[in-house]
Amino acid sequence: MEIIIPTQCEICHAPMNKIPAGISKKTGKPYNEFYACSVRDCGWTWKKPTQQQLEGEKRHEEVMDALRKLWVAVEEMKKEFKSFTVIFGKNEEPKGKV
Ligand SMILES: [Zn+2]
Image (cartoon, rainbow, N blue to C red):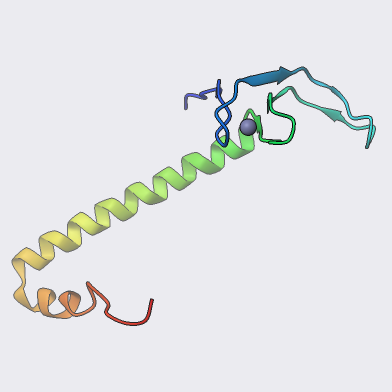
């Protein structure tokens, strides 16, 4: 998966500053390099996703893909069996409280 490093803040669109990896003065723990919005009051930061996060995203994609295939299969069934349209059609557009 391709990682796109943001060049602009997602909130205020100011340029991002690259913060090199170091050790937190607050906690004394090391941290990886990250990007921070150049507007101090904004506070938006961006970190490169970890391998674990990337794996999780990949699994999510796989699940979504399986759901899309399932949806297509249901659509095909609806075409083939009119009774399916009756069952599935009922709840397609729920009308109720928002
Ligand atoms: Zn910002």
